[in-house]
Length: 166
Image (cartoon, rainbow, N blue to C red; front, side, top):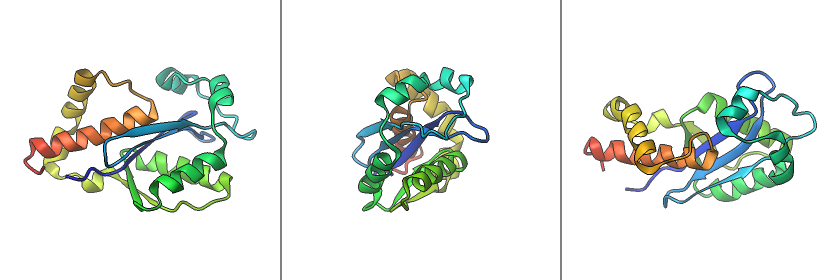
């Protein structure tokens, strides 16, 4: 079975003015990676509750983050040939991805779709419990973009196996 490419984005918050701070991918071969994003000067919104979830400080982003243009280029290089990737939070992730590419002055060379489009009803019925079991089984660190993307991909794979679709 070829695994879908999954994308996850961590952000400065969830409301108006929020922006992407980390983007992660899980590739079809099961490998995953993530990049922190340097906030632009005009990106000032910061929700301390979001920071409690992802554990990434603004200081760390300024220190270790990559420029917006570099992250957008990396995404296009990674995803341009594949052409499509999936997200479990399409509404949020698509908004933050659009913001990233807008400020990079580039267009994405790929399409982001809702993961839900790939899931059968039987997979959906097993999704939450399967995801929780994988978190416990593998000790996955939640709310970091690369790990979350890989968790989604593993959950997709396991639910296919459990429903006899693999």
